[in-house]
Image 1 (cartoon, one colour):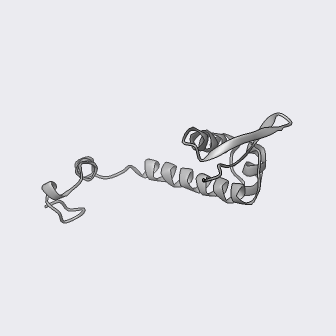
Image 2 (cartoon, helix red, strand yellow; image 1 turned 30 degrees about the vertical axis):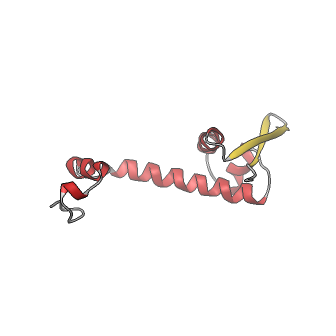
Length: 99
């Protein structure tokens, strides 16, 4: 039985076994993931309401533009958002329409 879940190793998923062996996730990694999730939620909140550029999204939520850009590129890569049109030096982004 493992301490974290009370299950035998045969019942656990491989990732849970690895976490047990390594002693869990480092606090710095937990904070990083928490921040990335917060940035992603802020972007989705903004893009549900309107189209926006990276600086507009960052300013609306008090985020760093580099964090917003990183998340937007991931969302674009996985087909969640699309570039609409240039607005000054930046593209505007919107949520991809689900059909």
